[in-house]
Length: 239
Ligand code: SAH
Image (cartoon, rainbow, N blue to C red; front, top):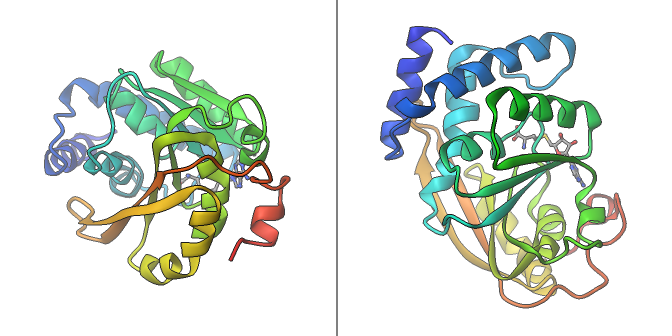
């Protein structure tokens, strides 16, 4: 990462109330690995340094605007892709355990490589589908689930809520258009044992783009019929 990139990241961190100086080396290494791997496999359309710093690193870290994270938690990132938002969060919050799930094996291999190279003991990448994880032994075990840019709200609710224990939360990163989606997802949320906890509007550091953090609270156990089998939540979303 160039000195300009590092400066931008530090500045974005400050806007989020985070001192990223102790983590700069890891972010720089992550950036190099991402750029190198992107030449071989399509991991992200955002390739320029400023874009990666603001739209991937800073955007991922903005989950921490939600005050519900605490050390000792285990958090699952559903559909992590190249590691967003899970990896930047694992870098700055070593006391929280992050499990990064993706259905695409080449992406999981990349995330595993980053975890190894950055020596992140609190992160683990898993290859698999959220529907399967949600029907197995990990069902209702996580303190929280995160998901960015994976699917519409009813779909992502069915992929994440079954994984979270009662009392836990789901955090979804959305654009400004989410209000309409929320109205439509109301019934699906209830059906899954969830409830809308709130919508936290914020602006991305430096670029000023508007984003929303949608908080879902897990208030009741998810009925055993959810999640439906792999592919069904997306093909036939709950309504
Ligand atoms: N969260 C990342 C990647 C978004 S792309 C980011 O914001 O940059 C969506 C990712 O979700 C893809 O990598 C895809 O493989 C994964 N995905 C989609 N449906 C999934 C499912 N049911 N279970 C696990 N991963 C899924």
